Length: 164
Image 1 (cartoon, rainbow, N blue to C red):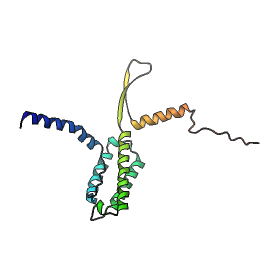
Image 2: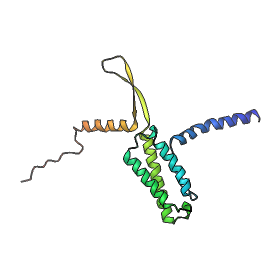
Image 3: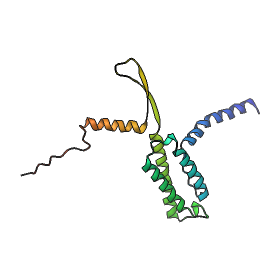
Image 4: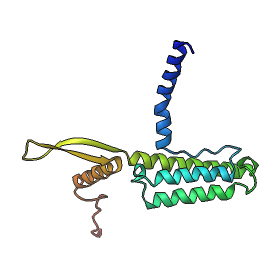
């Protein structure tokens, strides 16, 4: 193999590595016309295995239940001895929409669980400490700050005095 071909091959492998790593971190549901129940079972096992890791720690019980319910509905909509393409067109559209909902849940759970660390100065000390939080924790903290800034009220208070 000529040296230039080796360099091109190594470069292609190097550039595709991040794409492969992100695919391993973020599972996706791929529904095609030739998707059978066996194919779906394999995808489901992979999704459930990855969702049970720390990469999806912020995907709460309701999100996990919604994910399972959507996967169950997709599985029951695919013909037992056939493929997604053999289902009725309206059923195919419904199953594909459910698949998109599953992918949105997975994307949101992964994004919410992403951990970011920062150094924070300790009050009264010259030392700083490392603080790591998920995106969802930062969003909840900001919502608490906003709530406190509004005076602890979630909605404007309307006076209830009767008009005479």
